[in-house]
Length: 88
Image 1 (tube, helix red, strand yellow):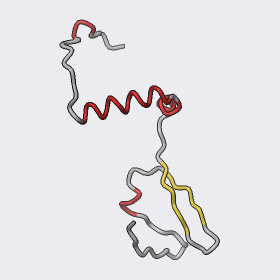
Image 2 (image 1 turned 180 degrees about the horizontal axis):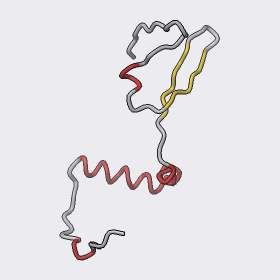
Image 3 (image 1 turned 120 degrees about the vertical axis):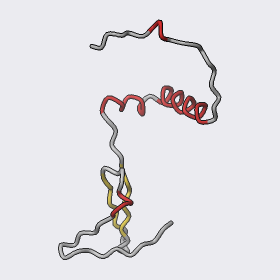
Image 4 (image 1 turned 60 degrees about the vertical axis):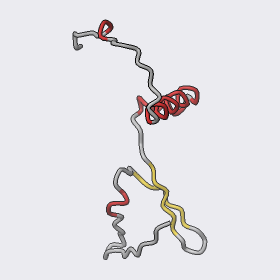
């Protein structure tokens, strides 16, 4: 865990700077002793939500990404015959 001193501005705001890059929001939890915990969230497009709700499909995508990362690929040849050259 990284610790960093942050000081609020005159309006009580704290700037997170580069650690907030790629984060769309935070859930804030305040413990009884005053400790503040920020839990980062990243939003996904609504059209991709189904993938995270379908554990079988998500598992297959994760497996495929792992296989690609490990270069466990099988050349299936060209698929150009299936290409649709007309753009709708």
